[in-house]
Image (cartoon, rainbow, N blue to C red):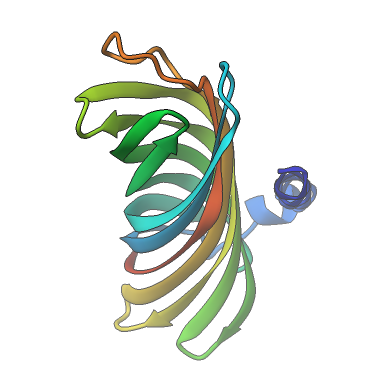
Length: 210
């Protein structure tokens, strides 16, 4: 988590320092992008009276966003990052249960173009925003909300131009957040009150520029 905070802060400071030259740029433009991702996630449940539980799983997700290019190097915008998983929990003295978890983040994102050649370019990306979600215990029909919490994302994008306005994009990133869990929807007691989540995503999508 500390490493991610340092990366986000460094990119933000770099963007602020370059602001005067960014404002003077003449080739500014908007882009919209979206795609699907495969995600791996590490979960750590803690709090309450039970020992902490570590869980690793994987699932699919999606993202959409928009950014404004101030010059050939710097862009800033907003992104929605969403993912979901299915996994099994095993507590001491409690039968194995199937669970689902989903989360969505609303992020402010800064992009920096590190390389470009002919019809391709490579970007570094850092974002910060709010993540929230929910967990569902399939057998017990129990739902528990993941309260809104600050999350961080760092990653890279590789774009290949298909037409003048459309590009194919490959994405890889790392996200992390720590959130409190709300009370469950049924009287069945949940042993945990907090979840820490972090993991990687790899995906593909499209970028439309104008």
